[in-house]
Image 1 (tube, helix red, strand yellow):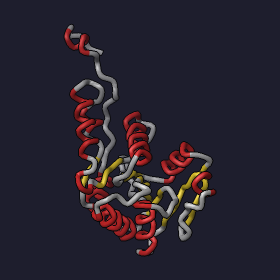
Image 2 (image 1 turned 90 degrees about the vertical axis):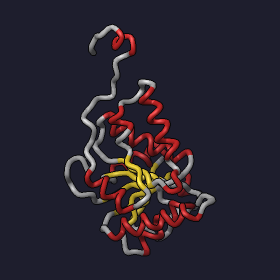
Image 3 (image 1 turned 180 degrees about the vertical axis):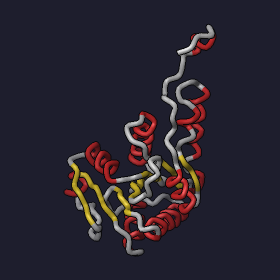
Length: 206
């Protein structure tokens, strides 16, 4: 963490499906075991579906604490995990994301779909803007997040993102290394604004 305080809880974003490759489930279990081994609290979306359910089941089986934040819609549909340490029902997805962010000291994304990407990009954006100083990481099973990293590098090359913000997304395939790096992470100290090309061409400064 950037404030040099130890991690106490990690919010994990991941798919409500399992994916086709068994390694997605295997790595989700490995991360769950590591979170429980370190005595960290898991904060996640509260359902028993897909990798989300795998994460919760694993942390609970290892004696860890799991806090689920589920939307009212999913709760009413009966998708809530029944064995959670604690759960909260949020009015909608916006409220769910806000509450998960409040409860977490850092964030890890596993492979997933639209919801996972949306959650990942939102917390990374808040870190970039300085609205919080919390590390953001990706468990890069099967190089799943390499296309995201390529898009970030492309945004840098085209003048829409600074390299420091492109590089702040921690990616690794080993859950232990990933959490170690989150604990050591420091927030970038640069702002997000980049001088337009014509300013550079004229030799002017912001």
